[in-house]
Length: 80
Image (cartoon, rainbow, N blue to C red; front, side):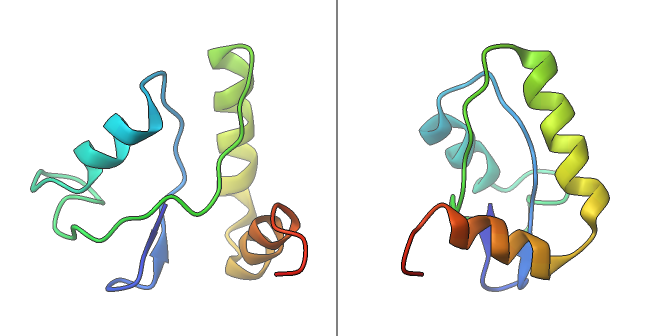
């Protein structure tokens, strides 16, 4: 997810539908995404198991690099 207001990415995994998960992130709640309601899905991947998804989530979070995240997002959209 990406927030223009915060100029931040949020990396996470879910078993819910993406539309339901983004709706939850854009409601006022406690937590990292709670105070901002402009989160948009900019990239997603599908995995067969929860364990695979969580492993990939941790891998991306370890990057701690907007540059690498922008490169990942760009690779999903040829010509971007």
